[in-house]
Length: 370
Length: 204
Image (cartoon, rainbow over all chains, first blue to last red):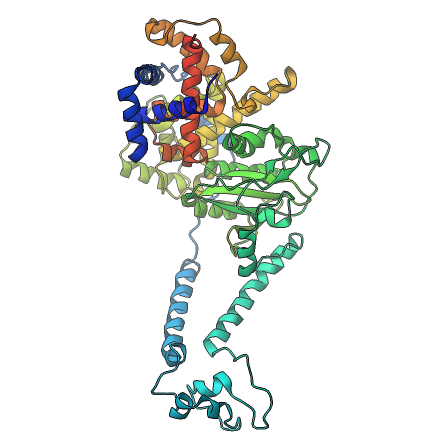
């Protein structure tokens, strides 16, 4: 019977053969090969195998295949021509970034003295030397520009309680206002998708610190991971359920969530998996290659087109079990922009609504082309 | 740059980019030339995963149609060949999955590829084949190799095809297959181990 050590040696020798080892692992492999004749023999066998696979004869191209492909292309749907966005659309983002930068610099210059704290040149000597007197100073005295002593702890002339919570400086207030403004559409979209609330940063930190919950919540739909089969839960006719697994997303893959307009999802069309010893194999089965055809009969034309585009961009997708047609998509960073463009070009995206990470996009249910 | 349809073409990077631009602008002839330039390699990748000539032909056609339809969104950041590879691998795996599903529905409730271990038919073959791999005649080795590769799960065959014939790095393979690098490494090692055991039989 094979032990875990056998599996490690198997993986090590295979990666050594491919020249994919470095550092400590490379030294381990070299040590092993120097000391163990069995390992040397195993490596020799792997090499023979590898060479045989490389030299394996592939059947020749059937005659006329190129013509048949050309004929098939004649009958295929014509791709939409590439349209360049008008100049003002192309420059929208860079211009906005530049304007923000300039505004930040301007604000920085205007409020520099307030931001850096109490500066000797602008703080009245009285405030520095005797804060108690300053707190008792009359409110009716209009605060001079940059007069931090008055803003940060001024007392009313009638002797009312001290203002213990200082008002934020203008810059801080502006940032707070901007945050509020920015989060409004996010909440709207999320609410329209089933009442899910976008967590604040504080809540996000809490969520991260909290252990993974077994129950699938609306937050799970926005989580980085595809749900994994959990045989202990019972839902639907198959008795299967999904729970959030430990993250396995690699650094070069960024998940994005695509949402479909609401529509009924048949319980039997939800991905079903057996438990597997190889979580990533499981994951790949859930993704487009493994999952799509199994469910194809249940897909709308727009969904099929959507999956074709994902496929062409090396993205994988998982339709999340639930009342809405939610798709979790994992796409390589480099392909992300292209994919979004493609979805827009085919009328699958209702428009850019890139508001958070993971990206949340509303996808139209049926495209005009269909 | 006129060429016969059955002629295999090769292009420099610049020529390929130019053809791509023309194809993106709606020039079908330009796309046909790209097809001919990459047909051989796409055919090889798909065949190594499917191991069935007629199916390979169907899937190769699918690959080029999918590429043609996705052309407007391809910005040319990757090489055309890399892009086509990605489509070819995905389409091939889709095809295998479809076939496996048909088989599962028609005959057996057991899905070998989902079991996580070496498929049962690979294991059963190992019980009758005990000749060490190195001692096999080249032709016999090839015959057994083809049988044993055909019995591997599609995801493992895809990994072997990309590594052994395309010489892709683990990093590139991981990106292409949308899995972690560790998974690529594990799949390759398990696929090779299963093949070795299948061809030469289990260690006594």
